[in-house]
Amino acid sequence: MIKSLKSLVLVISASLLLFACGQQGGGAGSKKSKTLDNTKKAGFVKCGVSQGLPGFSNADASGNWTGIDVDVCRAVAAATLGDADKVKYFPLSAKERFTALTSGEIDVLSRNTTWTLSRDADIGLTFVGVNFYDGQGFMVRKDSGITSTSQFKSGISACTNIGTTTELNMRDFFNSKGIKYEPVAFEKADEVVAAYDAGRCDTYTTDKSGLAAQRTKLKDPNAHRVLPETISKEPLGPVVRQGDAVWEDIVRWSLNTMIEAEEYGITSSNADSMKESENPAVKRLVGVEGELGAAFGLDNEWSLRIIKQVGNYGESYKKHIADTDILPKRGPNQLWTKGGILYVPPAR
Image 1 (cartoon, helix red, strand yellow):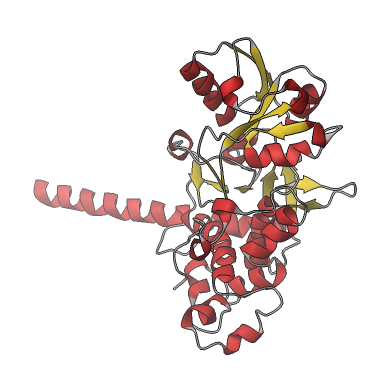
Image 2: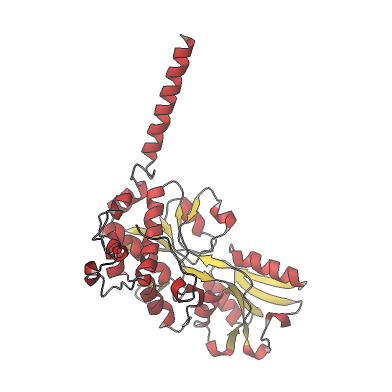
């Protein structure tokens, strides 16, 4: 009798556990996503972006957002809602970005955010890929005569953002060199730029892409130089909230689709014609072979919409970064087939 009761308890417990897992949604077998359901009900993707970083996420005078980070959210909207423009943008400081994500204020954080161990291990965050490989550097005034970080001396003041890996990298760099420094930190990026431009610090440090972008906002951009040294690895990419595996996969593969489309030469203008390709990998990306959308609870043209409405990664980079002269050369952000390190798993 006792054994029978114990067995019954175990069966009931196991059944309740399976039921709870199924109700959470996002399990690999359930193909359910609470975030996707909420996004469809709202009619837009809630996307966290920077407070203004040209080339990555920046709003014009009319409030229209553009940049490679913005294009990640547009890709998600194209995949899930059928329209890349169905995105609501939330400008966030570095200090408040993760709270906005974990609290549910946003569902995707696509805001030049560095993927690190401590952030990845955070119970509320999941990084889903890298859309820009970067590294931290320093910018100085040309009239300072400084052409290398080897010329930095104790007493130097450095402007940067609060709540970033930049602060920690800066501390490690100066301490390892035995250089005493004065941090001049602000929450908002524009405050940092304004302080540096006003002469409140000797150098401005952040990701090199950020330096190149923010340099365009200075009163006299040509009066400043970005030093050649790179002091860190900064893989930047989109982040989602933990607990919804299907939504996580949707965002991950929306970015992957853009990168793999470039590798196979599929563009926003030729995507439809690529349906006649004899390459199975190309056919899968344009939705005429396989049933890849079913893995996310989406139709089979989700990836085709991304390519047609947003473009491949190369198109996005060219439009927002290369053609604006922020960083004309892609460097490590070139495809792996062309000497870079941009590489994603195959869509199959």
